Amino acid sequence: MCLINGQVGSALPVDDRGLAYGDGLFETIRVRAAQPTLLDYHLRRLRRGAEQLRLELDWAALQSELLLMASQSGVGVIKLIVTRGSGQRGYSVAGAQQPLRIVMGSALPEYPPDRQSQGVELFSCQTRLASQPLLAGLKHLNRLEQVLARSEWLDSRYAEGLMCDQHDRIIECTMSNLFLRWQGHWITPDLSESGVRGVMRDYLIDRLAEEGDPVSIVAVDQLMLHECSELFCCNSLYGVWPIVAMNGLRWPVGQATLAAQQIAKQALL
Amino acid sequence: MCLINGQVGSALPVDDRGLAYGDGLFETIRVRAAQPTLLDYHLRRLRRGAEQLRLELDWAALQSELLLMASQSGVGVIKLIVTRGSGQRGYSVAGAQQPLRIVMGSALPEYPPDRQSQGVELFSCQTRLASQPLLAGLKHLNRLEQVLARSEWLDSRYAEGLMCDQHDRIIECTMSNLFLRWQGHWITPDLSESGVRGVMRDYLIDRLAEEGDPVSIVAVDQLMLHECSELFCCNSLYGVWPIVAMNGLRWPVGQATLAAQQIAKQALL
Image (cartoon, rainbow over all chains, first blue to last red; front, top):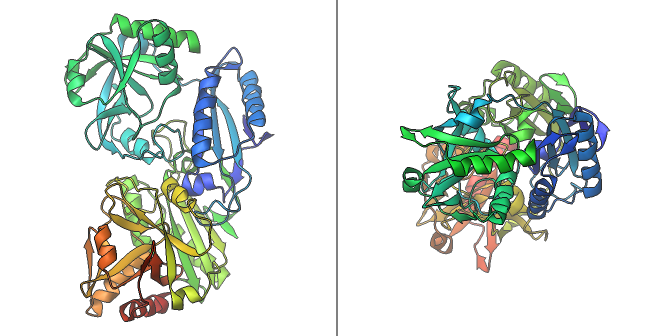
């Protein structure tokens, strides 16, 4: 099922600026018990993006469409795309007055369940993330770097791929954020120049702080990967996967990771 | 008029990866006498992009659709978009088997004619281009930087906006490439880390070399802007516009620029 500006449909105008320029944003939201999970966090990120791109969205309509789709789905995933809508040819936003909202329902992805308990192996991607402070953190529609990185491996032994920036700093995975247990504390990469500020990342930062185990946002270099005692990747669909192997390095499924995984499960399941 | 995979239409499937991730390429082609202009150059760039993104296009169908659209238009612009087509949710290209071709016809943009003869003033954009060697030079669908840059000015006295990279090197304009007359020769910015390799840029490089006035591709810093005796911007729709002013700097409409403008006119008019 799909709603386009509130109407059931499955096609959009060919002159939409989301297609032409990636001029828009998206969110991928897990649905449980006919409700969107972590909705405040998703909407907060969407607001930051809309502000940066100067997209004027109809927030009331958007929220009611998300709730309607969740009530129809019961359990599953909602993908929300908002674009600047149809415009004239050319980069100028003049004339693009009516943003487009697309709300799509689908089934939950079927990940092997032992990823939660046994952990996952990462592929080490060669594709480097560009530095662009104006767009960093946002979940915008310009995602060719992720497409290129995800195309680097086919072997299903790798659940995710690690991405670095052009200074070899560790930033994120293709569809996940990273947390490292380093010197007895959680750290997560600074995303002020590149990367997506994931909803689960922000949720875990808030909840772990409440539980007395605060997360530091820092520049993460390769050495820290060697030095950390545990690490995990996370997103708002699957929650937390312990990372146990990459490029010959090994890490255990640790207690701090399992605690974070529990927090994620409470929000999603 | 619009052709979608050869069929008349105006709607795009909502799960197209061009919309989801900007996973595709485009070309904007001027039509004269019912023929596309500079078609070899457009197709060559498209091939480079398709190779880098590993898009397998039906080149025969694509060319015949471009020729059909040109014959219908007579005079105007064809915008071609190719995407990886519909896929599952997620960055993996697995399952996206059928690329989408969109061929749209429209009227020529109506630029004031004195831009050719009197030259144009540039706005100096604050938006910086990120460095991404894997995508530099390609005309892909991830164009938020250009959208942000073009949103910086509204005043119609500025015909174009100058864009630099994060090292303050001069790269291009939002929809044009740049040529500078420096120490008696043409130079144009190196685009190996950012920017779009415009069809008119490549055409002028080839033709000026043939005419004994070769163009050097170099890193262009701010000082060279102060030192150059003429400069112009170019693209495959309008040809060549002399640049006469930016940020208090002034340049004349020079003879070398007028010679390049003539070469462009022969290809486009």
